[in-house]
Structure formats: structure tokens, C-alpha cells
Image (cartoon, rainbow, N blue to C red; front, side, top):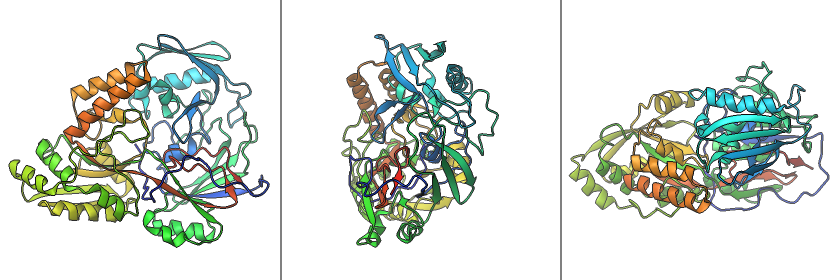
Length: 491
């Protein structure tokens, strides 16, 4: 689950990089990158939150396969892969010359061990459920990995491109909470908690060497501070620029604004196991009381309407914006029928999201007779109380991960949403071998979820990145989920 603010200007860009390079790359350069949410620790195996994926995956940690900023699967540690006709056997051929940061050569046994550890630690490792269909992982020889499934899983390659598929060194003894030992183009140089994370070019990288000497990720929870940082030159790139502040960059020499697509689903989650949300009339009334287009406009054109649990970049997307669309008159009728007039609800969300979101929802719900009591907390408190403890009425979260519909098919997730038909359709989508069938099953399931109204999908964010003109190779789509900086350069 992503926990990153992305209140950014609308617009789409299919290009994944910055403007054309104007000079020779400076291989001794360090690039400063402004981000929003800092990880609580660096343990890529057990720590929740997409802030870790954003910085460490692709750059420090890698898997057999990876993904592009537009969600295409590509081979990484695997030179190539094949899938059997029955979709039960995946065979990967490893690249040669791969080394970990500590100098140890990558062995096939490291891959087998890494994936087996995920399965053995299903209760504590992030995304471990993604490998539930895997029955065996073997290395027939030093260059080959074979993964056998108990049943077809259309999501396997996607899972392997994420945390579940990361390859670590079996013999390593480093503390994952504060250090990292990967195979990527950068090494983790340092982490100054509350300030920055530094990466350095990995001189023994097995692939094309990084074009910059280092990267410094700096964290700005204040949108204004982020704007000031890019204007002053404290950062070369600033992600997640606040759409309401873009005018401050207009006409600033040497800085370009790049817009991109995301799967950031800003979700108003309902606690479906708790009254009054156990009454579908209340859930639908809340959805009908929310003017999603007005929210997007107020946030600087920060996204597009979504209407359901699947964003446009993901398989299974259909336009569900007509389901429980804005209708405050009908919302009042539903609340009256449910005997829930003059209702008071509590909205809890992390304090790195702007207070304006809560203010907008408060004013909109008030018009149908719902009083919203808003409380913003620090991120750790939010995780403990909402994500883990499920002690909440309503909460706002940016679910930035792609292909994460499975959360709605998991009754143990913090939504407390339990629909057996949805779970069946999701299982059928995983078992399908035809992408068209996968898409159709997910679409059917998403429509059921939308009709059940277990949340309101406020909008899908678009993202705006401010880039100094001497920077190239910085992705501009899906930036809150992953930042592959292998091609980053400064001239």
C-alpha cells in the first residue's frame, strides 16, 4: 500500500524521461531528488509502505524481472524467461557477472533461497501472498531457475517484479533495517533519518554503469518547501509537485514541469465491519455526497475520476464513475431510510496529506447531514491504529501500487470488506491464462465492489515532476511507486 502524497497537476505524458540532454554527462555529479514520504526503516522484507519501493527497488534491489514506469514487465537478473503451455512452469535463465554490493557473485541458490524465504515467512514478509500459487523453486543448473505453480497465476510475473521477487544474498549478515546489499546500479551509502537517503554508483555493477556518481533523496512534507527547494536549486528534481502551487514555477528559467500517469488511487476507506458502515445505504449515501470533480478541481486539477477500485493503467479497468455518482439529494434519502440522520463520523489520516482534503470532505458531507470529525496523525500512529489495528471509521490513503485489486478480495485487509463472489472472480482472474479473460474477470469483480460501496475512490492522481534542464533520464510516470534511476544523468 502506498502512503505518498501526490496532489499534482493534471495531464499525461507517455514519455518516461526529461528533456533532451544538452551536454556531456558529468559522471562525477550527484543529483538531489526531492521526495515526500520517508521510510520508517529500510527492511524491504517486512516494512510496509511504498516509500521503500520508490527508493530501493530497481536502484539497489532487483529481481528476476522488473517493470517499467508504464507497467510493462522486463527481464532484469533473468536474461530471458519462458512459460510452459499449461502456464504452470516458468523457466528463467540468469545473466552472467552479477554481483552483490559486498562483492559476492550471484548464485542460482541465492535466487531459490530468496523466493523460498518469502514463502516461509508469509506472515511477516511484505507481499508474500503474491507467491501463494508457487509450489516449488529449483535451480537445475547454475544458470537456470525453475518456478513451478500448483495452479496458473496470471499475476506471477508482476509479483516477481515487486517485493516478493527481490533477490538477496543468502550468506549476507547485514541488518536490513539500516543497510542494504543488492545487485542494482547503486549501493546504499547512508541514511540520515529525518533528512536524506544517499545512493552511490556501484562500480562493480553487472549491467550498464550509472551515469552519476550519486543520488541524494531529500524529503519535503511541506508542498511549499518542495517548491522552494527546486527553485533555489537545493534539489535538481522534485516529485509530486502540488498542483495548486504550479504557478510559482511558471517562467522560472531552467526548470521544466513534466506530467505523468499513475495508479495512485486516493481512497476514502470505510471500516466495513463497523456500524454504521455495515449498512449499504450509509455507504452509498457517503459516496453520493462526495463531489469528486470538485475535489480534483480544488486540488489544482490533481487527477481524474475513477469510480471504482481499478485505475485506468491496470487490467480490469472500466469507467465506473456513474456508480453512486454525486447526488446529495438521494444521499439524504438513503440516510433517512437507514435512520442515520445527523450522523457523526471520524476521519483519520496521516499528516503528510494536506488538511484541505479533510476540509473539502467535511463541507461536502455536512450538506447531507453528516458531521465529520477530522484527525490527522503521524504516519507510524496511522499504521498502528488504522492499517494494523483497524480502529477507525474513515481514512484517506493513496493506494499507489498497480495490480493491487487483491486487497478487495482479502477480508483480513484493513477495509474489512468481505464479498465471496468478488473473491471467487479474483481467484478466477489469477487462474486464467488468457489476458482477455483476466481483464474480464477483474472488471466483473471491480463492478461488484463499486456497487457494494465499501469506499469512495476520490480520484486517480496524475503526477507532476519539476526537473532542472540539465537532468535527463528521470521517470515521470508512476513516480510514487517506483523510481528506476539507472539512466539518470546530469550534464
